Image (cartoon, rainbow, N blue to C red; front, side, top):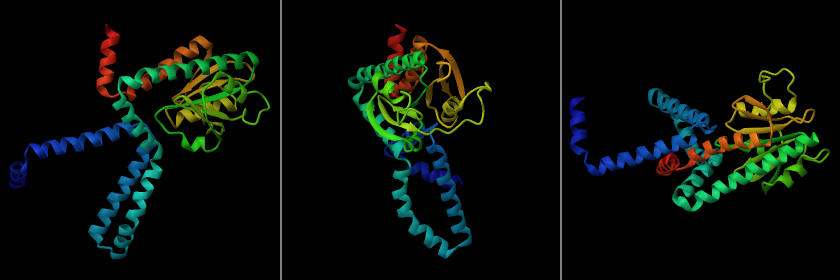
Length: 278
């Protein structure tokens, strides 16, 4: 063992150290991006399959099984970008934002502020009119499976559009709206129902759906009760109830600010913290 370590140390030079550090940083960056997303479970499954396959083929020398695995690898390489499409898209978007630096910083903050104001104004009017609504704000965890259950819109977020979608007896008013960044991606989406009641036995289907999607993702859901007009926010399987327009803006701003800060590169986070402390 000592001889092996000595040989490795003798072969180690500055180029090798830089090479190892770069590879380590890339893996660390990728793992940080997928942390808290559904890709983590998929990645664990792939790692388990690969480890079990290597162990079985090396120990038992299974010729037919080894042939099957070797010929399945090309298909697996094609399937990985398809399975991880939301995470890869988010990774490239973050890379673009990082290289953009201050050029895109102000425009992104402005866009997020407009989304929050549009959602809050729409929910306030829907509450006064006793029109039920269910709005899902996608964050780090991709909601592509839920989006596919609805009607694709890819429209700009606006108060008027949200009021139109949730007007009673329209085709899409019973489902959920999914917002990704500053776009309404889909409407009429079907959400998974929560197995719990969030501490309230009288919660209806709309509120249970709001809780359900937050139990399996980091999404934030805004729900307006059709019976009482009460505005609520669900996050991480918990619900904040009886919000008015002003409080709704404050809570959504807090959630969006946390997500926005986490998406920035480290040097921009430190710069913003130092600027806010002055």
